[in-house]
Image (cartoon, rainbow, N blue to C red; front, side, top):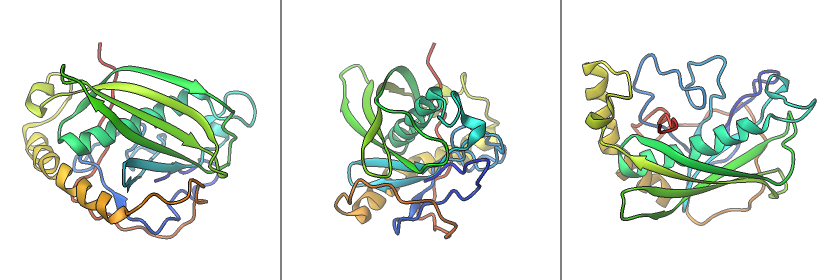
Length: 223
């Protein structure tokens, strides 16, 4: 999965693995900053299934800088949150709200360099909260940032007081959320054993989307 850099819109996975669509893509006006392909100002992340989770490859441009040549650290948090949150949505078939997240920065993320974020579920607590972890890797497989977060999955009907949805959109979304867990299980099985940790350079090859789910679970912070 990849976020195309604004200076270099070459953002697609070079992996042979197929992309996993997220449920929210069925919404015509879906504008998630992290994942929506319709948001020209967003990261436009796309995801692939891993045997133990979900991943995205991204390469950001100068519009995403903090210090010159360095990606803003806050965007590392966005990317980790999107990858972990979408994994939980796809696994549970429910919207998932972030309740807490902690980031650790180990090295700068350079502008124009491909990186990969890999997320996995750590455990599910008795309270209904789910803990997840994510790593951001550079092209050599070195870890440049890590994140750990807690999410609260909420049934779609119960979440509608926080999400603006028409009745028709809610029905369409409910259908793909129901299908998401089996679809991700199938895609994860097809992914096989984990490959090397190196990050594929983005290219322009088309990648098919095997899952009928689509769109990013908006992992918004829970108040």
